[in-house]
Each structure stands twice: as structure tokens, then as C-alpha cells.
Image 1 (cartoon, chains in turn yellow, green):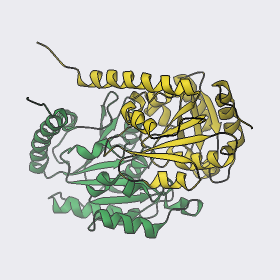
Image 2 (spheres, chains in turn blue, yellow):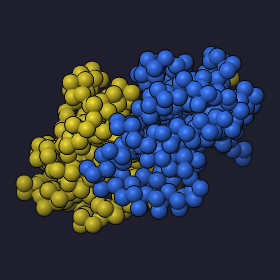
Image 3 (cartoon, one colour):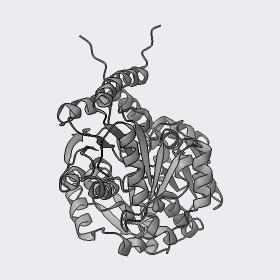
Length: 223
Length: 223
């Protein structure tokens, strides 16, 4: 009996397309981030803060993933940077084909930094390589410190975790000790930034980290 | 050319199994809730509050859905009610087969209230009927009031929305006016409860609503 493993085939096709995208992005020296997290973790707010402090130093663009709406893309566009909306039509994650189509519609020349904001979801997007250099997962304090162990795949695959809404710490039972213990047990070399997109706390370090990564990839910045 | 619609087949199989489960639950007069929401919206904390105030009035049980861990089930078990852990092995939602197996392991006699806590996810679980009487989606204030329109399917299919973490309202830009406008545009007859599982605010109304539903289904309570 011949069996067809649909999921495996889908992921293989995705990997082939992701590799093609990656070659294009590498040839242009564009540092690319796949930005992940739960609905409401603060991915778009973090992006708004980063764009404000980085757009004068480096040419950047954003691919916004959402099921149906253009709400997040409108927020990013109002910051004066190029943004492409990708609507998944109900699907729970972006895939490499969607990114391929988005790249065809972006001005890649001189661009040095590309952020792909994925659909809000701690499960499905973990399986799909989008041709990024690094995955960054946002976890907000109000979600609770148990989330890394409950959704391990996403955190294991992330080079960076941004802990957001630090200003709300006192109103929760979030334990930083338990968070660091758990996150290091999943991935010992993970880099953590503690920020609040409401107060601006912690963004200088995150910005410096990203600008350094952009430089390493060959992007010339005037930071 | 013959095409196989894998997703359609999966959903049809799910519906057949969900119908079988529903017949069993109806025959026993068990009111069943499918509890949904983002990771960290507060599903388990809400359940803890409800169990405390309801377990002396009605025999209830919980089916806990999680990718791999038993963290939530342990929290529920410590409340002294029957709980079955279902691990999806990485899948982003529960399905009716998992519920069938869980029901085989529960003491259904005299049980009058069953809560199925789904995987934390605002997308995938919306497509899978678990044989519930109603879907309840939890939205926390800290997630932002844009979530109903961004994840419309989940909210459209829910009879009830619980707005949680009301105590954190002043630290967010959540607009109750926009929330009510959007949620009513998705489903005009939706019932909303505003609660805080940290302060206990709003739980009396939610408890009364559920006890009434349990009575309607035939459950004898001594409330």
C-alpha cells in the first residue's frame, strides 16, 4: 500500500521555496526576522517602537501576516515604511510561497532589514521556515511564565525571546526565575530581551542587537 | 482527474465522531462547554474560579487539552475534581476522537457539567466540533480589543465571550466601545461576561449563567 504523507510533502515544498527566498535575500544582504508570538503578545507594538528608532539608520520593510484584516499593516504603514499585507485566508501561519509573492512586490534594492510578522499563534508557525535569518518569539508577562514549556517547539526554534509588558509584572504571578530556568532548559543559547512597548523600557539593547546583526549581514547603516 | 480534499475529509470524520459523543452526553444530560482562547488568556484560571464556586452544587469534570505537558491538568486536579489530560503531541487543537477517548475514561454517571479546555490558539480549534453545547472564548484585556476582527471565526462560533483581566484595563489602551461594536458585528446575540480571575470580579454572573444552562439540560443542582 502506498501512503502519502501530506504534512511531510507540504513541509518539503515549503523548505524548497524558503531556500530560494533565502538565496535572494542573502544576495541582497537583507537581514530577515520571523517575528512570532500569541495573539496580543505585542508583536506589532514592538515593531512600531523598533521602526521609530531604526528607520533613519537602515532601509527596512515589513511583511504583515494576518488571517483577513489589514489592521496591523495600517499601523506599520503609518510609520512611513514599506509594508506588504499577506492574508492567509484563515490559515494559522505564513508559508514560504506567501513570502515569495510578497518579495516579488517589495523594493529589495538597498533594503537591509526585513521583518515578517507572522500570524498570532504559538503552535503552527513553528513548523514553517520563511527564509528568515532568525526567529524572534514575543512572550508577554500577562500570558504567564508557563508558556515556554507548554509550547516548546516555538521557543526551541527561536534565537531570541522578547519578554514584553514588563511594566505589568507587579499585577501578575509571573516568575522570572522559573521563566529563565525553563527557557534555558529548552535552548541554552537563547538571547532574552526584557522590554515594555508601553514605556519604551529595554528597547535600546534590542535595537543595538538588531543593528549589529544587520551590519554582520553586510548592511551598511549609519547608526 | 479525481481530487482528494484532505481537510474536508478530516472535518467530516470529526463531525461524525462529534455527533456520536454528543448523543452520549445528551443521553446523560451533561452540559458541555468547549473553552477557547489565546495562550495566556486565562482559561485555566477562570476554570479554577468556577470550580471553587460550583463543585459543591454540581458534579463536574474537566478535559484538559495541551500539546505535551500536564501543567493545567495538575492545577485542576488540585481542586478535587475529575480531570483527564489529553496531549495532542504538537497538534494545534483537540478533535472529536480525542474527546471520545477521554469520555471512555470519565465517570459519566451523575456528571452534569463537562468543560473541555482546548489548546491555547485563536485559529485552529474553531474548525473542530468537540460535541459541546456551547463554545466560550476567553479574551484578555491585555491582548487588545482588535482580536475579534483579526480572528473572526472563533468569535463568530462562540455563544459566549469572557473578557478577562478587567483589573488591568487602566494599563492598556483596550476600548470597550470598540470591542462591543466589533463583537456584535460578528455575532449579534453573543453573551459577554466581564471578569477578573485575579480579583474574582464578575464571576457571580458567569456562575449563574452556567448553572442555569446546566439545569436546562436536565442537570439537578442544589444551587
